[in-house]
Length: 295
Image (cartoon, rainbow, N blue to C red; front, side, top):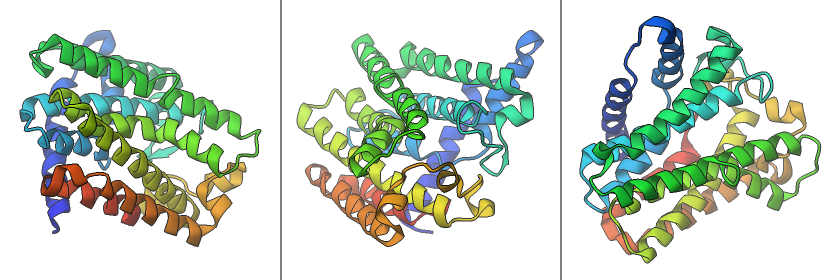
């Protein structure tokens, strides 16, 4: 097991425990809602965004209990987005993480409510004193995640994605779409440790630049998996982008040039971390991981 694999496995175990603690079983009329929330959140996943939170926080020697709560909040937002993305009105996917999507398991209405509840839970977690003793830091985290998840971030990217089915996008258009839909939340995950640590602007700027190129590398790799991967390995339907006529990095550049572009983005991402020296070794490893993964 590589250094990165070991670190990711340890982080996943800690994050899963925190997610489960923050999402206890509920009785009464809320029972099915919480079951759906737990189903959507605790049923696997790479936990990449939480890992970026924890590893970025390590650059600033942040207490793990603070970083874990921020990592959980990011994952709640990510899981909410997957639940809503899978709905028939959005991407209409039946599978997620190798099993039925939330709306296939619980019905569309419950899936919508589960996504809503996960989103609001994320801000409940961030705003609580247990996340950081300084209310200004908590407010900064809330503001940054709201920006990343909202109309000028992830949700705006999803709207752009729906509109893009009726448009012909060039490479700049696809890049902007993915910077919103995928990259904005990755940027928050990378920068949140600097927010927790009240870091100066040069450090935050370096992490934002790292996140920008990491997010593009991640999305190009996703496009390659959709074009070349298998449903059994990827854990969801593949080939949907081409079938829907969506513009993707692979569709515009071709598979080999897209692969080369992903490698270049990963190398650029790692170069942005020079400011942090050897302390950022795991973040550099992540840049390689996102383009080599098979799921």
